[in-house]
Every structure is written in structure tokens, then in C-alpha cells.
Length: 252
Image (cartoon, rainbow, N blue to C red; front, side, top):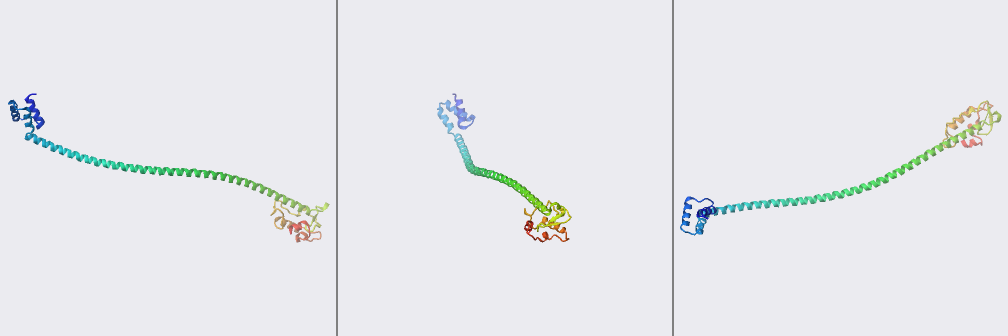
């Protein structure tokens, strides 16, 4: 390498610039006079300008280091904040997991209750169907019993009316002109038909047998009062309730 190249390289490395003409000439003369190349390089490196440049560079480097340290401190603060946020997020996640677990337990309990109530509802429905069937059966039994009782009452009334009518018209060949006293058993005659006993066959007995009250007895008594004996006197046997006949005992 030539002396020119060496001087220019030393200036650039140690002073950070190209050599000025005076300095270039000074160091070129020394090299041409036989001075050691390393001594000339050391002179440039240890010159006041080089030392000032190195101090300035050191200060800049120090300032850069301080700035970087501040940035590192800031980054560390940010990292710490991020770590705190991460920890807080972890705590929230744990709370959410606990809430989800609680809700899952509540859901399971609710599903168990639903299953229990469904079972009870099925039992109640089955019981309701049983009671409905029993009600239907009892209703049918009631309707049957009521119809049977109605039929028995109608038959009893019909039999009693036929018996009364038969007893009121006994008299052999004079049945169209005589009428007997039901209470005394005696036969009285009157030119009258057996329509003297005005019977409404639609009348029902009060309790299954004729009592001494009710429409049937009233119509019988009214019919007997309209009839008179051959002597013109009323038939007192039925009206007074005397005698020892069957109907006398029934109407007493």
C-alpha cells in the first residue's frame, strides 16, 4: 500500500474525515524521511482531534447506552404490566371456569328435577286416568241403578194402582154399577162407572210404597168423596180410615 493510501485510511479511521492539505503534507514528509509507518499512524491516532473524537464518540455511546437502558426499563415495565394482565386474565379464566362448573351443576340438578317431575306427572296422569275410569264406571252403575229404581217404582205404583182399582170395582156382574169400600171390605153400589177413582198413572210413589201422603192418596180420597151410597150418604169407610182391611193398614 502506498503512503498516500495509508494516510487517507488513518485519517478516516481515527479522525473520521479526509486529510486536510497541511496534515497530509506533514505526515507524507515524515514517511518520506524514513519515519516508521506505525509511529506516524500512532501520531494521528493520539492527536488532540482524535482524542476529542473518541471522547465524543464515547459520550454518544454512553448516551445511547443510557437511552437503551431507559428503553429496557420501559420495556421491563411493560413486560411487568403484561405479566400482571396475564395473571389477571388467568384469574378471570379460573373464575369463569368455576362459574361454568356451578352452572353445569345447576343444569344437572335442574335436569334431575325435570326427570323427577316428569315421573310424578306420569304417575299423576296414570292416577287421573284410573280415577276417570272409576268415575265412568260408578256413573254407569249409578245410571243403571237409577233406571232400575225408576222401573221398580213404576212397577210398584202400577201394581198398587191396579190393586186399588181392582178392589174398588169388585162386585161380580154388577161391577159397572157398584163400588166397594176399600177400608171396610164392604160392597156398596152406585150407578156409576169405575172412573170414580180418578187415577193419574204418571204419579210416582214417594218412597217406593204408597204412604198416607202424596197425590195418589189425595186423588183416591177425592174420588171416594164424590161417590155416595144408595142411601145418599158418603162412603165413610175410606174417608174415616176405619176398618181392618189391607189398605186401611197401608194408609194408617
